[in-house]
Image 1 (cartoon, chains in turn purple, orange):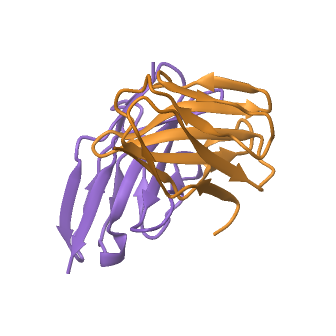
Image 2 (cartoon, rainbow over the protein chains, first blue to last red):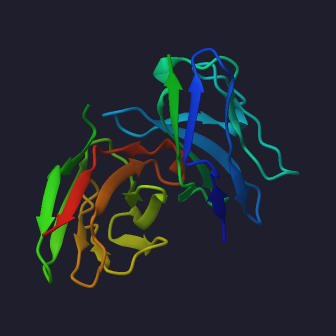
Image 3 (tube, rainbow over the protein chains, first blue to last red):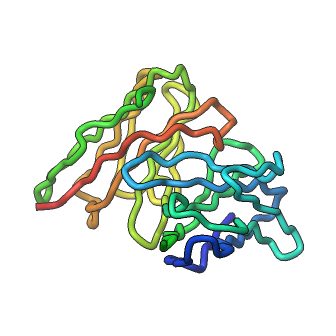
Length: 109
Length: 113
């Protein structure tokens, strides 16, 4: 069965510092990985997907199949990045997602 | 915000009582999902449906039931068999087979009296 693990429940950094939110997965097939974000009082929304290799709001994430990881990175954190971040894996069939436990990121001024 | 709505925002349940959470979407999505969100445990899938009149159990279906009689509606019933129902419940919808494009509702917080 597939599994997504986010080892850090809470992460606190100062504005301008680099930030990395860790995500590890286990899945026997070919995974598709995503990052979702939930800002305070807003709905959960898709942030980025690994297949598009895009940078959204300065965040990037690289799928490392050897280490089964999909860490989310940003070189210079901003206060508005404070939110709950979830890593998710989509099965090959595409019919459902498996989410990690989430990491609450706080960017201090 | 529109597209997918959940009601009520807060719901109270007495011991031994079944309660039903509403989820409606006007996005013409075939697929709908129910998640439970607990601190430190992330989102866990309860049930999902890819098409009307069909649904599958997720990872924590015990103590819950659903129906999918209409494309736009996917109500979740929390039965008395669910021993720890206090949680935040999120509904989502997406194009069938395109689970990553899920649009999430605002959620319902269920509290046990």
